[in-house]
Length: 106
Image (cartoon, rainbow, N blue to C red; front, side, top):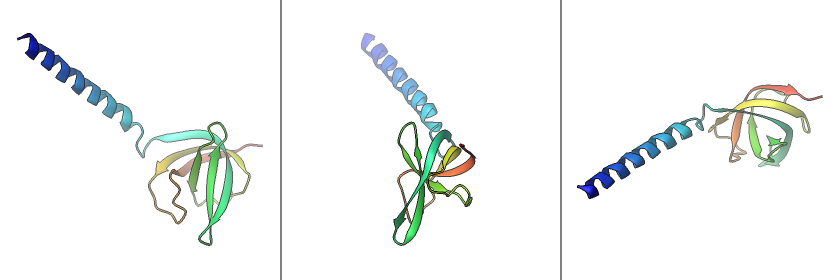
């Protein structure tokens, strides 16, 4: 009987771990928003201009998905709030974000 109790306890712990991980990872989905201060940059790819932002604290690069031409200005430093997106682009950087809002740093 002791062996069955250990097996039951182990199964219970595994289920709790799975539930904990799934609830933690659900916050990392496409609906999660991020906020950071970054610098807008660009590069040429297949004859197109690709825009991205570099997080000034972490150094991470994010492709910018926005229709706001004012934001797309080389060297502009901004505080940005955005959400991850899987939208395909010609640039197709690994991490792509859609800008929700931003504030230009002076």
